[in-house]
Length: 470
Image 1 (cartoon, rainbow, N blue to C red):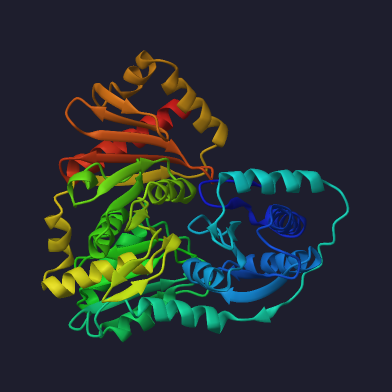
Image 2: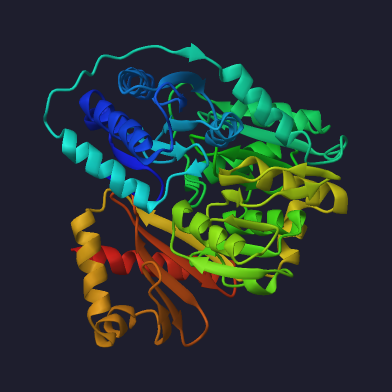
């Protein structure tokens, strides 16, 4: 087991049983030793729809109870809903989910009573897990009080206070339900605002949907459904409901960083914190200050906290996958919206649909109005971590190595090493290589003048990685 950009990840067979008991116990001990929790305090447990998640969650509940905390079962619930309920109760929480990664993998996200854990917490939890080691540990699963209804009611209340009551009247919106835990709540919220909702593609088996690198199979579904049902948009989320997916009236997915950008303007943000992988045009697309970070919500949260410490207000952030975070209170429709400093798919979905409805424009027109460079991203799955590390070491070793590697696509003008290698070519195109922080994947991000140039550069970039690996 290892921590990545957002939580603990590994193969499901490795996480079930002892490993989940070890890390749940380690988390509880860290909370108690650090004073973040006291004996008998409540701790929430949620999960996604993966086959392995119920067993892992039950093991965690048993371990947390034996460690001296009082587990509360929130069942299958969207991660932002679990996090919001934790903030309301001032309780730590634990979400069993692998997000968008394949069904044979799973993970755990950890939350302190005040929000997501940071990198120091990760080190402390890892140290506690190492201290347990192979020593005796009770792995018996258990059940806990079910409060899923209360947690979901609080999240519904939050999301039905963001727009005018009839804010989405006139829109026909498909909800790609697949196996996301957000599927029912999304439909309820959209219906509340007057949208006509069409349920699509519900699955009882887990389907990994990556909202940052949407598969061609998923895009084909979106285009077919849009045409078949005459939809203005299709919306969805990843497995645990913290990353949005929005396609326009043609079925073409909108970039996640565009969704975050639309949310920033909807909120009237003064400070926007976003990773280096988000579109390079964000700085010029609104009246706010932009802070760039490494990839991963802990880094975005750290950037938001620094802005708050400097006395800034209306601070929010988003990742290239569209997951949107709020670090400060915002006033929406005349009412305060509390901070939710964890990825949320609902805010960017609602902000984007409202932009189309209120401006009486198609989503493709809303997207085009931002005049961002065309961006694309994809990944090579089952790409050995050791191979990724060797490639990045080679590219960082010298400018000659980097220039030689990229010679088939262009000349290097400048580079950034905030997270992976982001290279601007002499013709203004951008190509960025970055190993995934929590899965055996190598990612490539590109920006270019138009869609064809971007897709060509992305294909070339992935081919370069494959060729080097061979």
